[in-house]
Image (tube, rainbow, N blue to C red; front, side, top):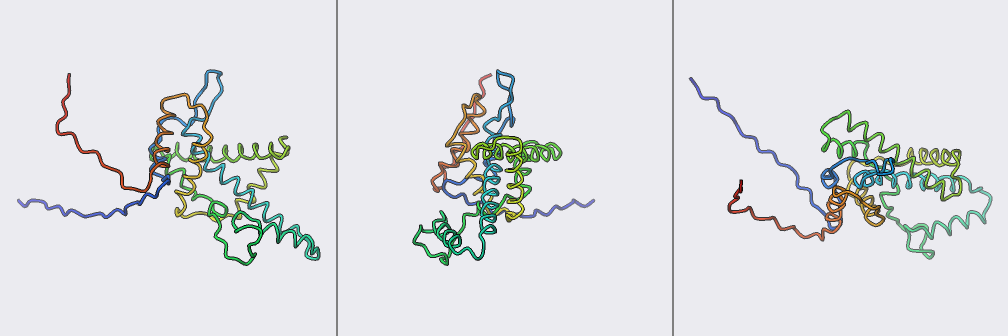
Length: 245
């Protein structure tokens, strides 16, 4: 009778290097609790977790609208209208991505990836699936959150434009959709950038987080934003654990 032999295989997992002030997918996966909650008035409100996740796609919607507006501005300038062309050149030289009005239009410009990229399609699924462990639920949750975030952002922008009517909101939604179509899809390179921008916004403009779970979730994200780039100390294991029963 021979003894069965097993061969151990060493798996090398790449280490994720955390940068100072950066929020990662693993931080969002640590968030617990529901995405929405019912208030005392009977209405449903976003929890801190729901707000953090939605903000990713509100930011994307805002960038998509900017992308659409930029494209429309270029297309609407008559070729023969030299004065409009000069105005456009001046406006472009004042772009926040340039050095100011004296910058040359031919100077190399490094665009913020948030302005030209949108998150990979499975980013939200990955975050939710880690918590819920159910493909169907996570897929449906991701779809609802994305659509709701874009609709809410469209309504907010329409209100700012003094066009808060159903037709005005629909017009903004159409422009966002066209802008999204022209944006590049991230391959995961900028995950942390999307999450950090969303997290920072929610931290800077907080709601009144009513529950302890909301406060704990905000604490998780705040800790990631507060990380200063130094290697965190690891707690030493207790020498003895005594259960007093």
